[in-house]
Length: 597
Ligand SMILES: Nc1ncnc2c1ncn2[C@@H]1O[C@H](COP(=O)(O)OP(=O)(O)OP(=O)(O)O)[C@@H](O)[C@H]1O
Ligand SMILES: [Mg+2]
Image 1 (spheres, helix red, strand yellow):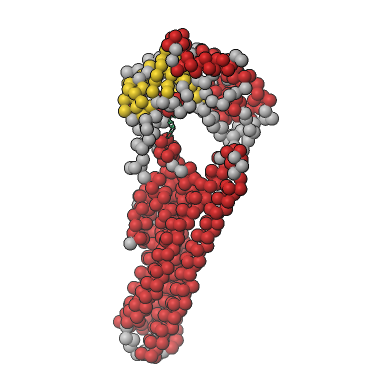
Image 2 (cartoon, rainbow, N blue to C red):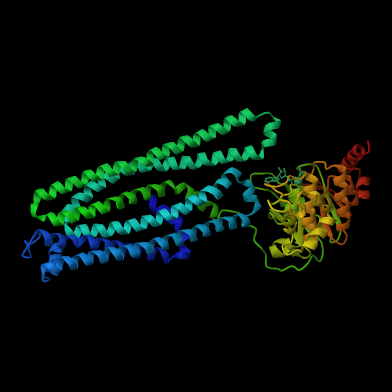
């Protein structure tokens, strides 16, 4: 059954609160019991009005027992006592159902929190290769929308459980009053729900289509944002607008259809159940006209049961409509089918020797070609190593492996004598600061962006770092100095400025290993000069790995590694490489000529 499947997917979320579901069930049953009891007491109450004490025996055993309980009390007291009992039951029922509401909202908010936190944790811990292989639009949709949907599904599930309890209690009462009427009622009810099930099936398919249409729309929006420059430069505005409108129309249409279908459930069941009620009344009165009080109570219970059953049905429909969202989130949370970077056991205080690659092969995913092939290199401690090569050669990939964003496919990277994968990951990353090709600024102040390198850095240290990175001067000229907001919602910084802030972020960390992935886009010569100057100061007594595009950086390096198509083709210092007269010499003279003409 679909409901069982939904339950099964949701259960792992409930495991930390395993006591809560039974508690909700018990409270639900108790509160329905008191409600039912209150209603049942109407039978003797009504009979006290209609008949005298020597009443005719009812054909229900249960109703007879009820009458016997009150038979010895004088008729004037009886009404008061029964009325008080009814009031008491209603009071208790409401206390219990209030406690259940509180418990339930506590539970669903706790679980919602756990779910979001789990998703964020998954995002932080899953290997970068997984995230990069995902469609970003779909990922954002899962994170933002489907997570909330799953929380809704949980609340719906609990509502469903409570409804089931109430319905069970009511049905038992109905059986006790008259099993014959209950039987007729049930048979007709089953027919009605068969009909409703037909509608439900369609809602489920539409629910899936709605998720699909939504993630498609997010995708269009995301691509529009990220690819805005390309769109404009190729004059594709009209084309993109058309594609976006089509995706948006699709969302409108599917959701409309979904609403149209799920909306029919309620009115249809209302009409059918009113009809049912009439049938029962007519049948019972034809059979035994004197059983009016019992019949009234029976119908009153049915009347109370009707919204419960309606709710049962609509929560079921909602829950099934949410199945795809739940599966989406659960699939994202599933740890078994995703790559992880596991931390090793060996602690690391500092880098004692160099970094060694031994016949390292790496591919991003199994369908793709090797991004690095048979790489064996040594990056000595305390020296500057430049990595050069054409675009797509695998330079950033090599650095990704050193930072352990990915694990090697085969071969091994050694840090001194230990394989990298056996080192404690946090310890290792603690030694590294990286200034990457695409510098990311958080939407906060310049000060906090720099402090991200080391959260406990003092203001003095931050300013010191900014000075070293040649960023202090331009930061002071920003409207708010160090408190200026940058990032998505703040001041726009130029490429060179962002790089210098990123450099300051790296400096404040005071890492043993500094990694720079130089941007390929040409910085203006002043920025370039400033960054170069900063680098010269920083590279003293530090292991620096720099992906170099500029002659000035390359010339300063102690060692140069030349990559092409994922292979190391040359290695040595500037002098040695020029003497070899290979690819590096070609690239070098080409740039040299450009720089000097
Ligand atoms: N996340 C990724 N998933 C799959 N393939 C990737 C990924 N990143 C890079 N690649 C592929 O790996 C190869 C090496 O890419 P890499 O980014 O290391 O090049 P690069 O030398 O840094 O180039 P550039 O100078 O342009 O930055 C390329 O063929 C690229 O298509
Ligand atoms: Mg790169």
